[in-house]
Amino acid sequence: MSRRQVLAGAGGTGLLAATDSTARAATRTRRSRPDGTPEQIHLTWGDHPATSVVVSWASPGQAARPRVRIGQRVISADARPYTDRISGETVWTYHARVGGLRPGATYAYAVTADNDGNAADPFSATFRTAPAGRAPFRFTSFGDLATPNTAWVLSYGQSAYAVEAVESFQPLFHLLNGDLCYANLNPAVQPEVWRDFGNNNQTSAANRPWMPCLGNHEVEFYNGPQGFASYLARYTLPDNRVPGFGGRWYAFRTGRLRARAGGRGRGRRLVGPARHLHRIRDRGLRRRAGRLCGRRARQHQGHPLPRGGRRPGQPGHRRQGRAHPRLHRVRDVPAGAAALIVGASPGSGDLRDTVGSWTFS
Image (cartoon, rainbow, N blue to C red; front, side, top):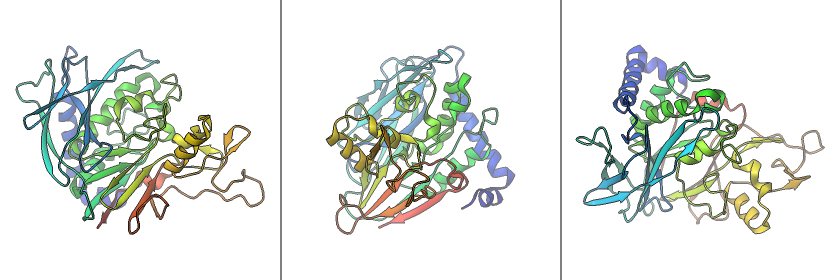
């Protein structure tokens, strides 16, 4: 559905309700003194979506014994803090890997810490694991979400309703196709932008995995060797088995669908992980990484070539199309299965204006 259709169907009341829900979620975790109260809670798939998930969150201050409870199990979380190099603010993030789950099952969980301001009533939600074999399921997809806080550059009020729209479909998972919150366009307040983004998404992302893809707007000045420190601190993603490049691209399989998340681009303007393939010196690792993010790692004078193998302006150059999610048959997908390759590209405004829903069986 288009953004206009969303607004027409929701009306002013629906949009205000979604925005109010987001405001309440953010207010619940704000304290005069920073503590370990969980916020920005979201799920991602583990290495095996049928049996594992990762619960991730942030807190205003350092949490004491951050943990997740599922039934009688208590899973300790690993802290992954980073300091924003422009504002100097330290951001506290946590990740709890939950394994040993049953395929296609629904689980309730709670997130807390010793210094959780809501310890008497900690945050709780439910999620469903992926099916082990062939079974129908639904997923949704869009990119360029931003935040509902219009004080930030490129944020807009519809962002709150877009999250509500995803939740209305009740998908098994959601694909978030790059350019997540545009924090890099608000360099003095990058952690604040990420906070508004995460608290907005929590409405849906705490109930089902939201699987992100790097875009060019995830690159932030001074935050890590490639500028991905904010992104990588917030997401734990399936292992791509490329040392030193974890989280830049990945793949996962749900039922008979295999999804690959990696950067795509036009001509020489490659975004996301694809632009860094030439930095991997080991040829075997470079080939494996290229296959995993959906393109071959071609080199020319130290830079990866566009997919057509020729530079813009050369005879036979084929210009890249818009980065819609597309279905492909690829070599490492079993017969009868489908592969989905998603990514972000410059100027892909269609991803910002649409909420897509697909059902597979």
